[in-house]
Length: 383
Figure (cartoon, one colour):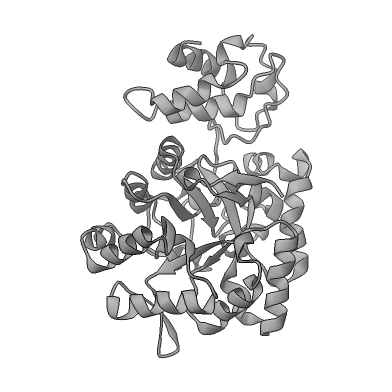
């Protein structure tokens, strides 16, 4: 299993992670065995947003004796009240729920203390100078929370967090369908079977593209939720593209977004774990989401580089996808950010080496004018 650094946290997390919300469906011993099987496959990060005692007990038992092998995303503000999940900032509930999390997970620290589910700017502004935020910062100061993160489905709100001075990583919903959509404060609407995608949508929404680029620039790591759009992308009849994608293709799409370190998949069976982990050995053809989207009957990414890697191999041995990524990151700002330029300068071969042979353009499924972009990149970075 390949590992990636999760932004400024410095944690080396597995590309495939464990989204724990389905654990409560299973008998405890079966769920514990499922988690330990995932660990044996190299998975080392799990998200526990769930407040119910059963899920937390399962994770605690599965990690018993091997706590150091797991990075836990534990959420503050996800509470269990009268047998139901309630999202709240009320400290009367937040603090006992977090203490319960520690107790049931059999640990005295959480690697990633997540500010839970902030999807409106009003909520973001409300928590800034609040007892809730004081508690989050207090936990960080004590070392009970090692790093502060936040979960969101709204790119405008996630962007506010990424631009703050204290959020180190984000748990964000990433898939090619959601990436077309403008900011929406209603996640249930996006996931509903009746949600209709406008035929006018095309390519990545500007707010989402900006979020990914700012995360890369500021080294705010991303872990991915909703990577399969609730399974909708596996079914051509339910997919907004009119075609189906495989789990491997969806995983590859998420992992090619700037700033992304890990995609957290929900698992019901060992076979599903094997299917996700197989990504690490999948061929380029199996990972190829780009050809599927480019030839889909609905919604076009025409002219946009999605960093899919179809342009390879390059006669000048350029990493075209990475050069395009740094170019896109750089032009978002009035001046080229120093961090982006330093990353670009570390590339073995720069855009100026492009011979404009055009071979890559014949392979690009989205019709990106690669040679023109290489010329612009060389002018922008000076080499």
